[in-house]
Image (cartoon, rainbow, N blue to C red):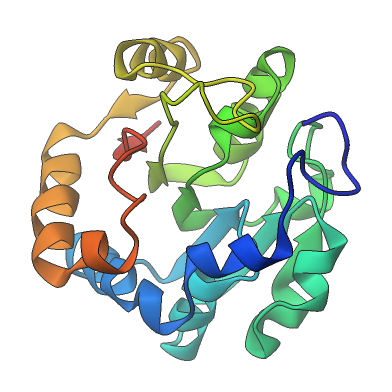
Length: 201
């Protein structure tokens, strides 16, 4: 992801593949059932579908994304909670003083250049308190031209463990079982293809 003006192979029509606010309701319902966060940060939030739902339901939220055009077209209720920044560089301290109950970062890690992936994970940790939970995916699909850092499930878990994260096996299983029952896979068929799982520090 060396060109920050547009992602490699960017197709604006393909943005519809990431759904709409209603598409993310099953994700919201699943996370509310198993974690019930009062505050949520989304790294790689795109146009903020998920955090817009959390904000509508009373949570404090913040979204980070590298592309200005995503902020320009983001959900209106999170415009003031949207930060345009490079996830490959350390977050400014102004964004790390507040900690969040839930961090979400899906379909991001595989797009981060390998030499910057530790900084990316450190940015996530900088937003977490000791009870925080992280929902993260890391695609193993190396055939996508944008996936410059695809990892197998085993390598993904090693990378997370080496950077101070602990896998929450029970919560991951609950996310999968509840998420499937709520229809996440129907609305977002790619959601369960990237080793999505729950972690803590």
